[in-house]
Image (cartoon, rainbow, N blue to C red):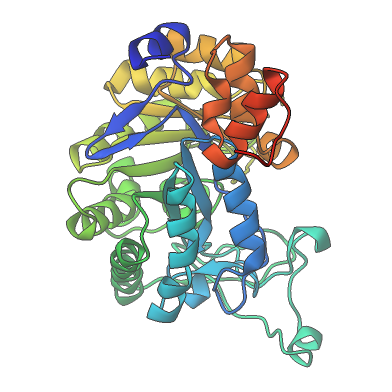
Length: 385
């Protein structure tokens, strides 16, 4: 099937060019924290996990949230790129993902006050001195204000100006390493209650200096990080930014704030706004979002409509026809998926088949596609060829 036919039959499976990078389709493997890293470095687990997604036909494959400095991890097992050894360890993954036809991408983040915990299987229980005797000591998180993330977590260190400058530099250094590590797309994680989001929300940012107070002050940290990253991230490579379009239940940061932030991000060279939600809660009348398919799509739609930005939709998007409709109705430009791809790594291939693409098997590497096409034609396998 020629390119024009593919674009006519499915927008989801059509290519998208962002700056100098062209993804083979609009399906994105969303960052999924695996808690399997060793000293911040990826392992064989990551090679298989991410390679499976690339082999299955996704257009863009994100690694998990990757800490820009050691104190920016949530756990001892989080991914990191704060030194050159870590950067080098990603090369075999980025090269393998690219060899399978997908675009390797990285999400840079900093957990801020959510530092020093066990992983999700232990429900992010706070590390204690007992853990220190087993080689897993706790460490103090940092935050815009000395406010706990949860009642059982330690009070974080309220960042001084030198702390802010150090973190901005850490993002810049991490982006530079990400280029050397072979990544072609970089996303800055400004959502889910982590450090950048902590600065944005008035629930977690009670500063009275230039990095707090009104919305412009609370956005300053995020914008300075974007400026620092964009200066070192190649001009021909796209930059994404993940937002929590609204805080969690009882929050204060809302859609209007996100639209204004997005306009500022675009002016500073961000190419795609990745629209998620949640992470910081309070006692306002902001409701809890209903956990239903497409529940965050309205955020991507509004940001796209009100700012002209390209957006990425995420959140229980599992039905190919639903995803196709979202794109065709102009509600988003990209579809990001996580747990559905854990369940079915070849979801893009199956989606292409369901949407009627004759060449759906070509999303697989030729080593797979050749054999599967022969089976479809009833030819079986022969050793004579």
